[in-house]
Length: 171
Image (cartoon, rainbow, N blue to C red; front, side, top):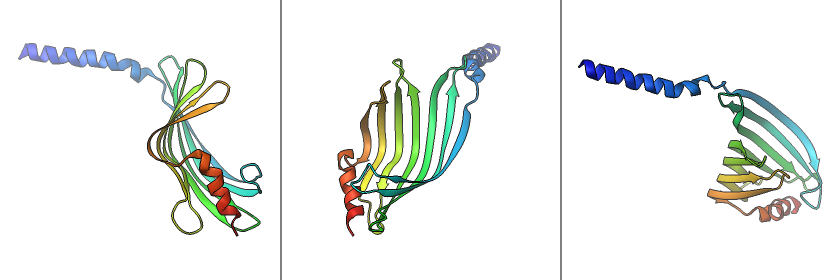
């Protein structure tokens, strides 16, 4: 019995030593940015559209025991309305999910992004463009990026402008 208690005490001591460095890591630093912006986009379509974005994004930086940034969690929750002032037609979109950003050795970023990236809804009816699921975004030092779709429902980004602008242009 004594031998068993000593063994258990040794396991508990070893486990607490193994976990101690994690306990010494600085707690995450978080901030929430509230957004309520309206602007004119004259680049996406062949005509100007009014874009209204409202919501928030919570950003949490996670550090190791030394104080170096290990990764950053971003949790966006945005509602977006795009309107063609000429036709009065509008689309609604949402961006909700989790983006985990890790710096690469080269100085770029690796982003694990999951959630609703695009879910474009016309004024009535079913979504006309969807990108929902898990994707990896590899961002190079120069800002260029590559998206790798892992699982979910991903309409082609190549079709986005034709679908969205086509809907907004139709009177």
